[in-house]
Length: 88
Image 1: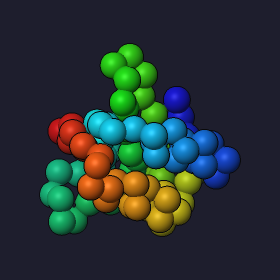
Image 2: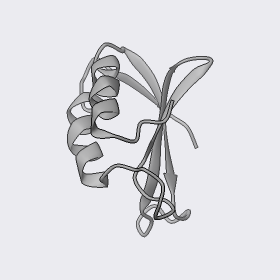
Image 3: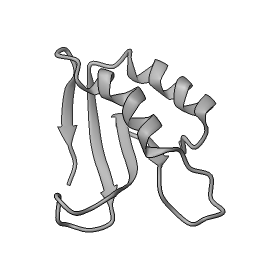
Image 4: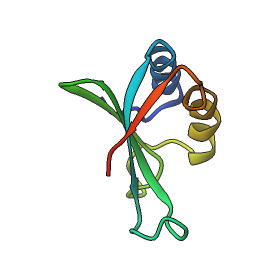
């Protein structure tokens, strides 16, 4: 599911808040973790379904503000009861 509007982000955040374990993958502009920008967030908690939150991309594609996404996801991703599996 592509999450590319504030309304879809709010629905996604509600679903994410209910999870105990997720897989997280950041799509970036390169490989140097210090110098790259985030292009999108890929998050899944079911084996056959995932969510992608674009924050950069072609000018005419719908995407969200990176700042908004961080503001909404950070409190959830910092929960002590959430197990985050990183994908690389």
